[in-house]
Image: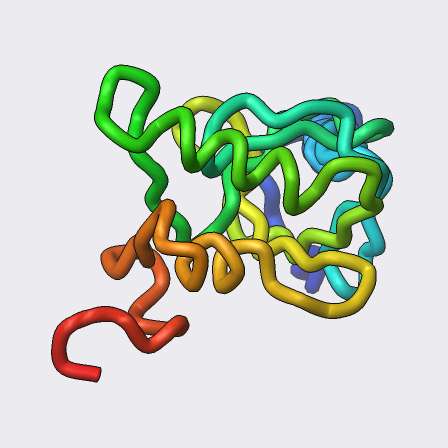
Length: 148
């Protein structure tokens, strides 16, 4: 009589180990993002510091946050200090909520960040003229890309 039991190449203990490993990796990924809401995939916290015109850090969030859809001049480029100081003034003393969009190749959270009054950080920086929309990633979300 043949068994209807499926045949697995791993023993029960082997499958148990693999299952535990998968669960552990998923737990590490979820916990490494910081205080996040699993339902909305957001991080939030008071601004700790501003790194440059499109990157900041929040208290309680282990990774820096790269503002989604925003392209500010790099430190060695003209306009970098204006972008950085504008972002500092915009977010100083504020608690932000950032919708996690991605994790970049440097391990930063790429987030669409909002001030407590609902204003979008990237939109404010673009409107101030100190940064531009990062069209490759935003897909024209802010309406400043060619063809919009």
